[in-house]
Image (cartoon, rainbow, N blue to C red; front, side, top):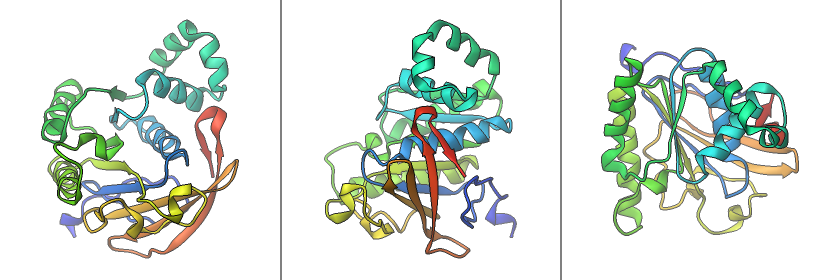
Length: 238
């Protein structure tokens, strides 16, 4: 039972049995809201005092900072962008243990980055967001290199005790439009055997997404809940 790791907070109404050291995949088509979910979850974790590392190559760090500021302050992203000097100081004053990296690294260098964070915080980050997983790929894209990325992520999670949230795209087909039910087998290059937890998402309408618990290592799965997204504040409303 000790080897299962300690429970890790999951803020959405699904019975995901997430433990420290788990790899969680969030699978959805582009523009569905993967980054918004990741930002919202990361803010909640950091708000509890747990260090979070957000590796972002799919979105600029400046845009992620605007999203975080909007999420935490309750102001809209447009309001934040209209006075960046003020809100930059405001975000610094909040003091959340949330740091970003946009370093152009591959899977081989991820552990070096995490070790640098350990030196900064005095401990490993409790949560690491990789947005998106395939940006760590080294070599020609294909099934072998895809599995290598997710195995490396799994290894880093197990070694550090961090929960790693890896954002991943669906393959082509009906699910690629972002408006259709997504199962774990829709993952590009079939890497679904590696993570302990797989969440999938798709749009219901402009302000609502469906979040589906497709895989749950030691608990119930196959459950879907609808969540409202406040896009203007990068916030998931439960």
